[in-house]
Amino acid sequence: MKPTKTIYLLQIITLLSFLFLQTGFAQEKTSKLDLEKDLTILKRNLEDIHGGLYTYSSKQEIDDWFAKTRLKLKDSMDRFEFYKHIAPLNSIIKNGHTNISYPRLGKKFKLLPIQLYKYKDSFYISKSFSVLHKHLEGVQILEIDDVAINQIFNTLLKTHKRDGNNLTFPSENLSSLFGLDYALIYGSKNDYTLTVIKENKTFKITLESSLINDHVRKFYRNSDKLKALNFKINDSIGVLTFPTFSTNELKKENYKSLLEDSFQKIKSQNIKHLIIDVRNNGGGDPVPTQELISYLIDKEFVMYKDVYTITNKIADKKYYEKQGLFWLNMFSWLKVKKVEDNYYRIRNKEGMDVFSPKENNFKGKLYILANGNSFSATGEFTSFIKNNRDVLFIGEEVGGNAFQNTSGVDYTITLPNSKQRVKLPLVVWEMNISSGNNSHGIKPDYWIKNTIEDEMRGNDSVLNFTYSLIKKLITNNVSQKK
Image (spheres, rainbow, N blue to C red):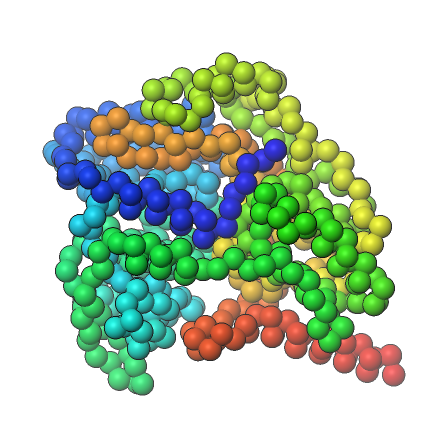
């Protein structure tokens, strides 16, 4: 079974539990020599176990990045300084399941108390940690501490993971975690000066920073809610909201029965237009993905062309404490079969077995709503659908790559001197599709995103646009028949 890759909300919760619970560490400095040793260890482990290391950047490019980063190191550096140097590796490897983790923050760390909303090339305060600043929500930002916001955003974007050259996924993540990222890279301090526009007037405001506390943790956890699995029929248009492909999460909602009932209703009520909403669906497992696909294409299919790793063990096990490496190293032969050097095919056939179409297979007009947080298995789902039937995509470019990802089984290495943590995935999942890897997710036929005004009012302009588009198509068809 492909381990669950949850939506970004759950990634944030996991991240915060690491960041905020470890508060008893002093800001120790590490020598340049020891940091160079850490880089050597990290590079060796990436080369040894990461099957997708050279998917988007060549070996020469990655070698050059490590060489240049070594030259930038100072003697000595604390964990925040080292993180600034190493975090851009996220945008060099360009694999969304590989991650240079945030450093331990400590209870005295102060951050900018806002989240951003990006619409085209403009930036707005979407949410504030404090009730004192609620009146600023929806206000456009031009500068922070006299630096242009677009320059700041592009700098911070380099520290965020992504799949290939797609920027929708890192932009969504950065917007959500902007206050934390800004403080890490530009400095944690008592207050921040923002240049904003409100009611066509430009002025400066000073925001007092927020300490890491229960209120901030709760804010991040509640900032994005997972939509419920749901099917409804609205004015003869079916709408299926599919918020995750996580088997564990979907089983709680008896998703197979819901799918069966939903497509039975579609057939019995002769529904010709179906909208599937996978916005903010961060991925999951092959089986739920295949279950949904089996209702949407009318032929047998195999989802993956290949599923493999480049190794069957991890040599540097001392850097992966309490992660079950003993079982991996001793019993991996039960899970993988060596075909040749650096190529071990996964024995588990999940995702590579033949799936048959369901009886109530939908053959009408299909519309898929997606955005930058449509990631991982959702990238696979959207890609497979596009390659196998007619469909219109509405929203933004899908955050997950359309051709492959390296994910599933992953381990977190802790570098011995800096204590920097890096998550390394092992399994390469290559899609069974005709198109090659263009370093992007599926792009929309109609680019639509909520404006900041839509966000503040709770409007769903993407869904509303789709309703209007369908009604226009229906009207045109009726007129042509006359």
